[in-house]
Every structure is written in structure tokens, then in C-alpha cells.
Image (cartoon, rainbow, N blue to C red; front, side, top):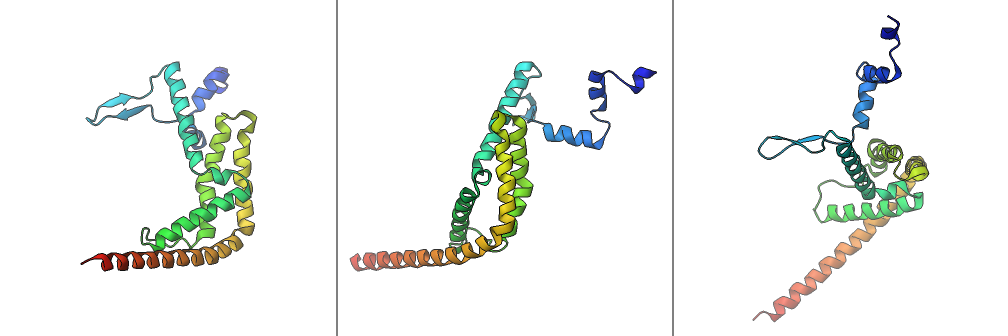
Length: 196
């Protein structure tokens, strides 16, 4: 009867895996990737074998996938100056696309708050995964440190940075679009003067 109440440590871990909602959430968080997939014909395919070699390949691919996600937003996990530099460039790119009717939403609307939400929903969880995977050893915590620090600084300084950025970039984008229109006008008048 004592073994039922106090199972052996190995059994305890296995036994408790699905006994609480928190344990189930932890399992879902720690999942590395898909073990099985479906091919185009609808057949199940074992992507990673249930062997130590398959487990190793799954972990390797999960780390590579994680690092590719980090690379895409690496500026958010570096110094605040680097974050702001690339944030301004992204903002300008999106604002230019908006004025050229390549995107339908105006990036000036909610930029400050959207950055905070982006940190909460994507950057900080990603940095935590980087720390947990431990690929960079003792340096793995740097990603989370900078992500948290940049979010903190953005909450303090981001509204002012955004206001300045909106003013500055709106002027730059307007000037660039006027220059583009002028060049197009010159090209069209030059081509029409060449037409017989």
C-alpha cells in the first residue's frame, strides 16, 4: 500500500505526467517537433524513428528550427540601440509599403503597443526556449536578458521613440515618393518625346 502512495522516483515522474493540467501544459511546451507526418497520399510517415538516433535527429532539427526563428528577430535580443536601429528600418519599410499600396494597414497606428505585444507573445517565449535548449551554454541566458531589458526600455522610451519615428519617417517617405514620381514623370516625358 505504501508503494501506491509513494511510487519509486522513476515511476513517480511517469505516473504524474498526465495527472495535472500543469503537467500536461509542461509536456506541450517541451514538445520538440512532429514525430509523424502525413504524405500527399494521406499515409502516415514516421519523420523521426522512436530510437535514440531518431530522438537525436528530432532534437537537432528542433534546435535548427528554433535558431532560424531567432535569426529572423535577432535585433530584439541584442542591445537596445540595435533594437531601435532595426525597429526604425522595419517601420520605414512598412510605411513605404503602405504608401505604395503594397500593404493595407498603416504601421503608424499602434506601433508602440504592438511592439510590447510582440515581445510578450513571441520574443520572450522564443528567448526562453533558447535559454532552455542550452546550445550556447552559459551564454544562453543572454537572449532572455536582452529581450526582457529591451521590452522594459521600450515601455519607458518607446512612445517617444515612436512619435519621433513617425514624424521623421513620414517626411522621408513623402520625399522619396515625390522623388520617385518626379523621376517617373521625367522618364515618361523623355519616352514620349522619342515617340514618332
